[in-house]
Image 1 (cartoon, helix red, strand yellow):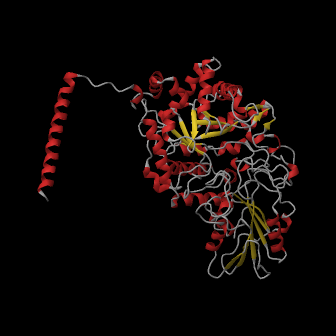
Image 2 (cartoon, one colour):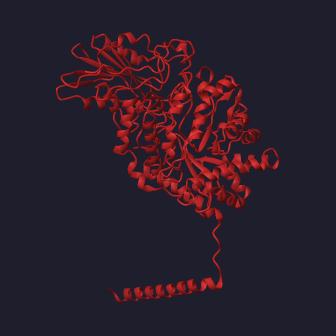
Image 3 (spheres, rainbow, N blue to C red):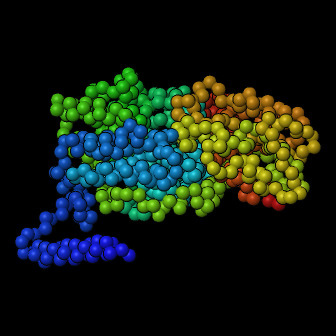
Amino acid sequence: MTSRLRVRRKARRTQTLLLTGLFLTSAVLAPVTASAAPKPIYQDPKQPVAKRVDDLLRRMSLDDKLGQMVQAERNGATPAQAARLRLGSILSGGGSSPAPNTAESWANTYDAYQRAAVDTPLGIPTIYGVDAVHGHNNVWGATVFPHNVGLGAAGDPALVQKIGRATAEEVSATGIDWDFAPCLCVVRDERWGRSYESFGEKPEDAIRNSTVINGLQGGSLNGPASVLATAKHFIGDGGTTGGDDQGNTEISEQELRAVHLPPFQEAIKRGVGSVMVSYNSWNGVKDHGNKFLITDLLKNELKFGGIVVSDWNGIDQIDGQTGFTAAEVSQSVNAGIDMFMVPHDYVKFLTLLRAELNAGRVAPSRIEDANRRILTKKFELGLFERPLTDRSYLETVGSKEHRDLARQAVRASQVVLKNDGVLPLAKKDNKIFVAGKNANDIGNQAGGWTISWQGQSGPAIPGSTVLDGIKAAVGKSSTVTYDREADGIDAGYQAAVVVVGETPYAEGAGDRPDDLSLDAEDLTTLAKVKATGVPVVAVLVSGRPLDIAKQLPQWNGFVASWLPGSEGAGVADVLFGDYKPTGKLAVSWPDSVAQEPVNAGDGKTPLFPHGFGLTYPRR
């Protein structure tokens, strides 16, 4: 050690001792010279939430209060911009992910917004939302569970609650505290492009599976890995005429209450923290501007005390024109929406809302109500005490435990609709040919809302395909041959598994108003296999029932696999009898697209009725 270094270190020690002495002296003298400023009530976690909210509201400026009502997109507002405008929330829409798309990167992004928010004078934390609708599906490496159409067929509320808990853990690992799920829509017409987001065609299907709310939110909102759940979309989106996404639901109030309202009543009983308003109209009036639905029915009659949030740019559609106006802002605020998802036009929204308030077209009490609801949930979530990511949950993202749970959900969701004895397949001494565009495509089997909004074919996520599961299931004495288009198949095979169906889509692009048929590739592949005389097991990967009545007689076995997600091996578990099928249809299967809409109790005779599903005979 050089003498110069010794001198520097001695100087540092002397400086430290002097500072310590000054600190101790001031600490001793402090009670004598001045009393410490009392902590604001809103910063005291021992105080009741309502009292904390009251205290904070008294301290907030109008800028603070208007900002709390806005939710902006991650790629539309930086942390600094969001903090400067006091924005209450940030979201990542479908496909809006940081680079690289890892759980750690998501956590870093979340923490950046949160640090900026709590560094403002009042330190009000943000709340970050995401569409984790079948697992934390925007994050690479996360567990991707079956979409709701499959979980509805599984008929296992306890399993669905476990899926909610697993999803909450993976979402919490990235810091995010608000999930825009579950969708409690009651699908009444499978031509609708969001059919796979529904648990089924009866209100009981959604009611039964609303246990996912308990899984997401846990025992209490301030508990470990608790994520604010969202019941959506309020109300009637599954009942539009013709299955038209964001269309018009032309039904009586009696039918609205009988079919579409009960799942939301159940969600409120379960303590759901937020409700998202639907894009659709009800008898010609857009839900986003309908005061009867949002305030009179949801808030007053049903006593919902949480946050009412708009859908993405939902207020734009009230007058049928592109972009929102001052009139649409005041109408939607007065209708009862509390948080406005205006991803990129948040400055315009704030300007118009202030003007409408100053003009007397929006009452101050409405601003107070919205803020009270938003702040209450932020306090209940513990965001003021624990604003940053709990990274101890990072190890849960895509964990074996969660993937095993997802595989169990895949098994339970399989619905065997036809079996002339070909199922279950033998594992030993068997020669199996596998074909079809969905046999070895994990993107297709995951569907929409997977990494990107509309989803994508190909290696979109890690996991196992149906083909992977089949290859892993057979014994050494069996062979499995695969060709997507069934080239090379001959009569020497004992069975052929042909995995057909849909490719990924989300709302809008997924509407199929005129045709629910298999595509040309599927039909060609099936015909090629059938021509060999090999027994055919058709496995349908799709977000809804398709029009297969004409092809069904040509198949020896038929399995509805829905959209199984990342664990395609669960399909093979049923095909080979490791798990006896228990799935039952939660939708009526039409005998043709012309029969839509077809639902239980409407007097029509579907190809397969709601509740139908075969199992294997005992051996």
